[in-house]
Image 1 (cartoon, helix red, strand yellow):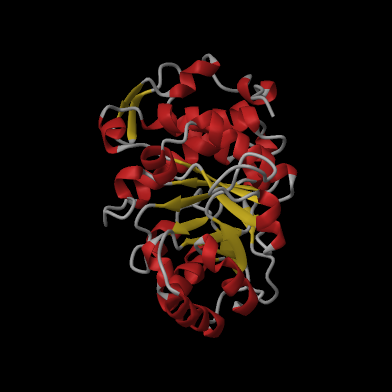
Image 2: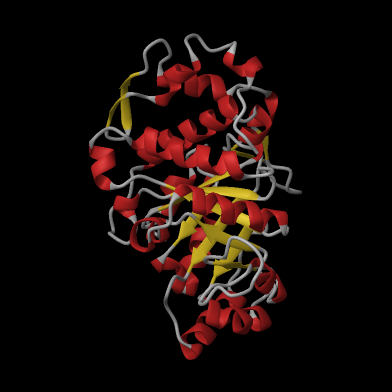
Length: 322
């Protein structure tokens, strides 16, 4: 799906389309945006149509859900290269006994070797994701896993573009886009990861990097249906450092704005944008209160059943008194 400008949206913004690329940017906060300020643009996107506010429809709930998008809260657990049969059995037991809020989509991504074990014993309340896939059908591709094989094991999602695949394994934007396009063509949802390195952030390139990664997905994807975007600042993954709620919200709002301007307002509204990068039980509530943070992609904390459950249940932080 090639990137297309949304003319009805762009016509309401002063200045050329390229002014949203944030060329003058310091850390996670732009210092200037030529003819359109970030606060003005953010305000515009938050009010682009009536669907950008979602009131809770849960029976008996008088709360208002502070979400700029219209999608359901989404929490994924990326177990990475961790676990044994015994430790995963214990984790599954903890998750099966956890009380999870009903208005959250919950997904876990075990290592390939343990997907079948998890699928066969984990509650159906939680869906299964893979951590990677190949660009097409199986065949003579030693060490790879095809989307068809993932589906055979019951996987509904796959994580693609994670920084550890980009910066350690060496996957580039085009390769990641091919994987994403093929997964979607086989009706497997994609958790599409984007995020900047520390040196890119310090050089004021956060938006440039994230927008380029978004464009690569957009150029490849046949549709944005069944796509969740995970913003994971690389400098915060596994380091204990976390973007402040304000910093994370700023980037999430910019990502939603990019989608609205370059794809469509509808896609911007319905696409969940979740935060990753040392999200845990202690910081999730404050992060979840931000209206453009639609959930989390959790690393280390997802290996602890009770803590992961608390992150899932942080959706309640989005509910404020009516």
